Image (cartoon, rainbow, N blue to C red):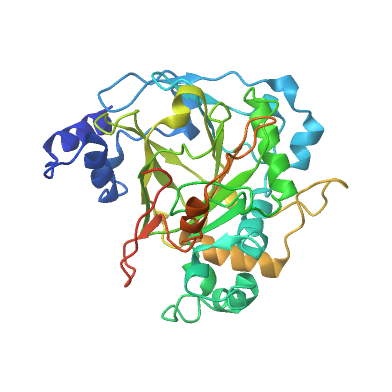
Length: 391
């Protein structure tokens, strides 16, 4: 409580810039925050929520409440296939004042996060999926970012002054229906098959949260460095807002801000640790949110404790989780010591819904600025346009 009071006092003394709203003020505060100080005293940590349920309400945070999952909707076999513990062992929480918001602290089986990390870095980054590098490079140059980068990453400890590899320059990848950062739309003719393993994982999590008919149709993967932020935005481009938005975090921890319908409402801050899953549905589906800070490990360039466990040597015969070779693990581990990866999965269309017909002028305008990055990299020598979905 002392840390929380100190944090509230810090907020009170924070100067407001001209025209700055309450959300932006706290975004700036946490962007400049320091680990191990009172700056983070008001940030909710769901990984310890079971130790102190019903956190007392304060001016900058909401009390934590338990969320009751639909345990019978996902079999232990299907959960295990996706690398998840049985749903009966998951902890799930909500926040008073944010109906439809669900937070599940790391429900993955030991070692199984590595499969999804490897998929984000090695498989999902490949063509025909779209990434931020496509704007400035040919498809041949971005054909296999993993193969072009793995030796650089494996030798990082030897030469820390080397240039960044292509994989380290990756900021986002889109899957399924590819989001157009210029028009802020999805379209039927800009689509590649959605990864079946990620679809299965998403459908199990959605079912456990009460959404049995969820279809994974679009994904945006964000690749954060320690100096990256995700600006304030609302995800409203999907045509069906009755379906949840699922978020999976891996690697270094970050601060997530969840606000209101308007940016003059002060947001609630929470930690996202490796393996955490967040679901935004119902009222919370269209709230402002942002990531102002990725937090370096307190012990320097180290992995989170939950990633120190390797994948099991023996996996179920029909498991979607694949073994991770020593070489692949080494590349992923080196990358994640100073990075974070986030997968957001969405259903774009309602059942039996089609995309609306577009005029020829709209079609021309939408051909496409897929290279524009909505992650802001503070130390980049190039001034990037920060585009967030529907900012």
